[in-house]
Image (cartoon, rainbow, N blue to C red; front, side, top):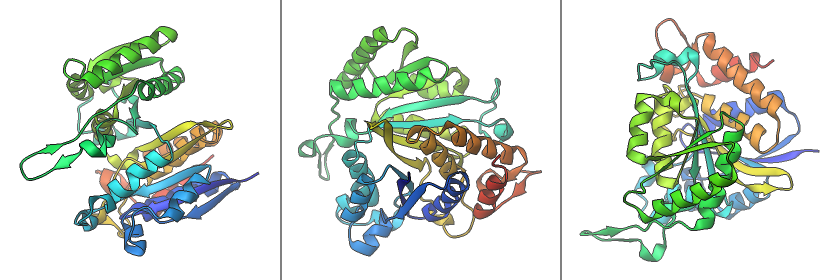
Length: 356
């Protein structure tokens, strides 16, 4: 039996890091059929739309999607905002594929302690941000979204069922980790956050094996800097999760190290997902062999774990990445004294060699 994976490398450094992720996938499994497609700025240049119908249909017909990166300054000037890569490709992909649960791990490897911008008193940390991905202010009613040169309006809407399903997913994640959830909101100001907190408390009563607490988003932003090791699972809404996960990613030393999974509901025993690095397209270093492929490679590890239940090979990839970093191998974004500078493809090769 074979599985179909849609590979959409995207823009900027996307094709470079995705090539290394595919290299790793092929090294651990030989039962995947990989089909390439265009998305983002590259798709707009080729077809006039950032999300061609053919790409969307391929994703829907696949068992998982591996995405590189989307967008860049070149396409920010497109007059119609719905044709810009982020708005015209990423948001519709999430909506059309029902990718409501975004999992963003932020793990500081012991070998990367010196690369963190923080002076961490308690050593490495390992947390997971579980972000609701298809509701909130990013998906507010188009009828209520307005802009002119004197005012602008966006609407933030959450329905109970949207909060319930992401909360249940967070409990599933926490149960496989340390069993602790911090639910992040702004319940002292926002009505959507009051509903959020109410629903989380209701579901917590059904899952008393998991420790649940609440934290306001501004406090969480501070606590991530002060003591990130206190967090296990951070559960939060779309915009807060976008911001907090980038903050958590940066304190690991580089956005180039961190993967993500955007998941749908289970289907026939498998969970459909789109897997991508947290980082952007970084057009300033595209084509120079400077990009860090580790985030894309670890996205493959997440794909094996969540969509295919292959914990053995997922862990094998994570162990290989850890070993390569312990060996002192670095790409330009994490290079420091007494380490070895590798190109994008050389880093991929080094990780393949450490797969055991």
